Amino acid sequence: MGKTELCSLYKGFLDCICLCLSRRSSESDCDNERDTENGHLIYRSGDVLEDRYEIVNTLGEGTFGKVVQCTDHSRGGSQIALKIIKNLDKYREAAKLEINVLEKISERDPENKHHCVRMLDWFDCYGHVCISFELLSLSTFDFLKANNFLPYPINQIRHMAHQICHAVSFLHDNKLTHTDLKPENILFVISDYTFIYNAEKKCNERRIKDTTVRLVDFGSATFDHEHHSTVISTRHYRAPEVILELGWSHPCDVWSIGCILFEYYAGFTLYQTHDNKEHLAMMESIQGPLPQSMIQKTRKQKYFHRGRLDWNECSKAGRYVKAKCKPLRKYLSSHGTEHHQLFYLLERMMEYEPSTRISLSSALSHPFFLPLLHPGRSHFWRNSCEMSR
Image 1 (cartoon, rainbow, N blue to C red):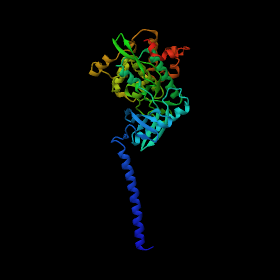
Image 2: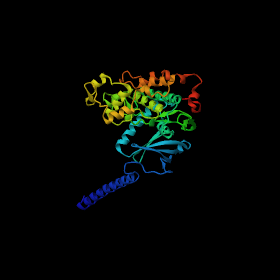
Image 3: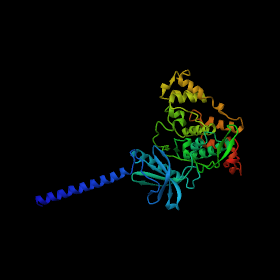
Image 4: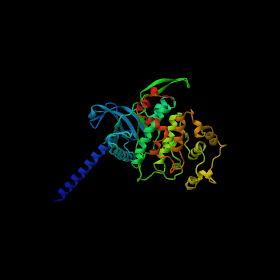
């Protein structure tokens, strides 16, 4: 081969590489044009993804991405919720872990009897992992907020609590810990309501008609054999063993459920704080001193002095905790039997020592839930118009 031919061949080879790089750059630029600066997919109502999902509107937004309502043209035009993950590596990886959990749930609960949200499908769209779910309604937090934080009636709390315990017990049986239980992650299937007059508050309040719920957001769910992050749970629902970095397992979910049920009952968060030591001080005000066994084992000795919480009740923070917190039973709004039963359950759910905290399988047979087991009465507990406080 002559020198001229060799040069021509080499030039052709370089041109080919440049063309490939140009195409890749063009595709990359195209993908970038589809995303906002922080990784959200740019879309509008009427857009169709995968020749199937027609976007109707946005339902919500989080650090992970957005949730949109879609018409699924492959399912006869049924309405579904589509979770669109940000086009960023860490969120894509987290989404794949969530899909793994959701697939395990579907495999173990093919008839969808365990009150966990059902994944319908998942796919990749321009670098965004998208997960489709059954369309649900308002979260139990959003309904509480829309109702001016008026507490749920105790019979409604009973029905919701039973479903939540059932769902999370199912996870625990399958070697999973949810790790991010909170009212925002418990959604009503239908959030239709009626107005009733609240004589005590002298105002109208919303009373939800059907208290059937689903547990959602498995993005932080962790299998027993997987690495356990040091910090888990949204602050207000975080168990003491997590704060003290003593290791955690299924019981941390039980603690979170106790905090959630209190919030349903009182209308406000039990632990309104953003600081670890203040959080521990609140726990001691509400539930008594932390056990010596936990204090001795923790690496967080900076929170303690001579085996006791290093806390100054006369400081600004100390006065705040004293004003905000009182012993748990002081929050009872009635001395009826079912109210005392609920608080007995809360005390068992929020025992400091994870090893002695009630398991959810035991909680499900607690006296507080006995009315739900009465034959022929299941509809009564769902019909909020007939529910009493």
